[in-house]
Image 1 (cartoon, helix red, strand yellow):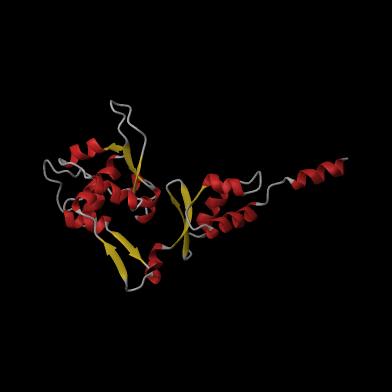
Image 2: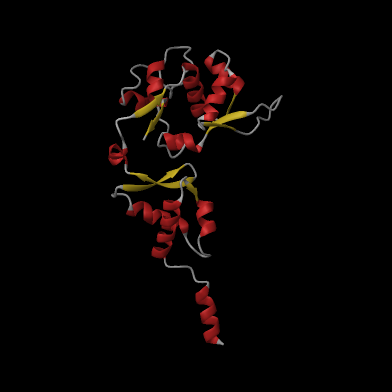
Length: 217
């Protein structure tokens, strides 16, 4: 009887942490998109500790050519930042956004979740449907929860793809005024009445440089 209980217990015993790391590693490697912790848990045997496995893998890959990074609420394997030049070719396709699109994207990124009326109030001009449609087509913004106010207007927020494209873990990692100045992207404070807040860029060209959709093959 004792032997049968011991055998039954071993069948449901979670794999050792190093084996769990291998499993998590395989899941991340096989996925074309960043994977949520919930998805990882659903694939692992009962009793595993995916959080610890991810932490161990992150440390393991810290000095290698591949890094384990957190993108929003997801995890993904990415080429180490200092080796990204190895993945590039001379042909780079760049599509510049209009001033309206850049300003709208910046306002949504720094003020999310925000309604269309609030975007227009900050910019001082109306926001065309085409601008919103373009940013949604790029999968950089999404429709959020409706505001609990008259008319129940929808709100807009940035997407995980936006974070992934710009290498951010969360919206909190967006550059602040000090970072923009130190990077030479902002030489002086925004002028009074500017549509850009303290954390935003100052002029159109500099905005385009930061928010261009750049596809590197």
